[in-house]
Image (tube, rainbow, N blue to C red):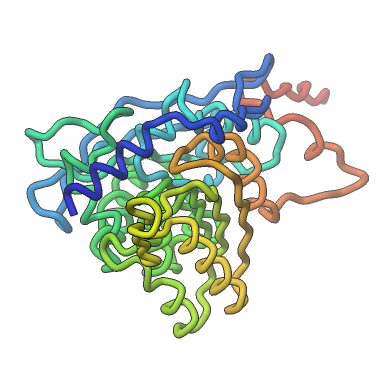
Length: 330
């Protein structure tokens, strides 16, 4: 297992010509006039679900949030990758742009890393934690322990500071690779808390039994989960060796398993969307289409429309930028 995880990490970091085909669009770049939210300092959350570990996390608060109404919520596993301003996802910038244009709701975004012991290093771009944290167990196992971290440990801390909607339709969770299967597992166990899942290069493979999800989906009553999956045809394909001596393990074929997930979800009647590219086990493609994935997940969030009332048809600015109504003359 250790060698396979190491090989997987190397593949993720290696550049490939097929990944170079994917570029960020304007939604992933700072735009003039768009109010910028604030990403707070990293905090540590001790875990009861995994005694002796803590989870590093930070919170993005959009400029438009003022606490007057409950905000939507999005939580990303491997938070260090999604929050990085020059990384593949650039989540804060994307949320700035989409909230400003009212394409997604005002959303509190949480970036959380896998659990680690206090003496272990913080997850980084060069080591997401496969070799130095509790990531393999937390993210790839199909039990409800990691869901307990999110629902029973993280959410109560957030609710001490922020006013967050309790409606699962207003809550999403996502991730890349093992973080993607972790996000799906949280929603699978707790659809009463999360109804939206974003999955890029998802590890629905046999690292800790994740390859059973397609059969499990088919054999379980449909849950109220909406999911968008992305993967590449050059993701890890579980072929070892060359020529007649080559071996193939279908349970460890990332792309085949992602396709099986879509087939099972579609057959069962889930609200599912997907994009297959030609990338490797890389976040280049997922980062390029990240804004569109968010738009699709939130496409029907409540947004009143009245032809006689233009107030909901302009840019959504921060409270400080909102025009002040003139005082009424008496």
